Length: 140
Image 1 (tube, rainbow, N blue to C red):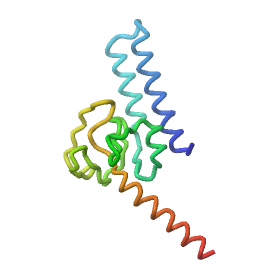
Image 2: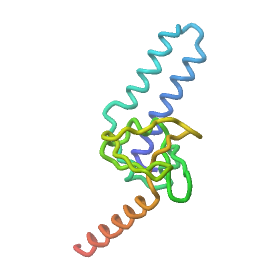
Image 3: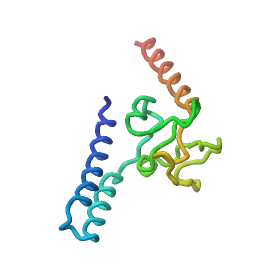
Image 4: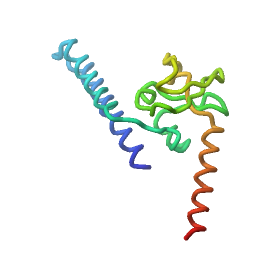
């Protein structure tokens, strides 16, 4: 597993643990619980600018992304908040939008928002990586 995937999973576990504590500890007042949850989420999102198009399909699935159909991998809401601005996202309806520039509905269904990456985009990326590798090896 790549280091970046491990880092993201570590942050996710921190948020899950903080949420569990908020529900478990009756001595925490509601305002304190909410403060703890917000601080954990803010810490998670702080300075994150992740280009999820650089992840393999398996890594995306490990992080909680899901197949909508054979052509689209949709993202969980938490991933949207740390996803790099400028990435083109595709909706379950086939519309495209640019993260950070377009109005993107973040309604969650089945654990993910209705936006993500087409498998075609990921395959195109994989081909480019292979070609770059071949070209680099040929130069050596």
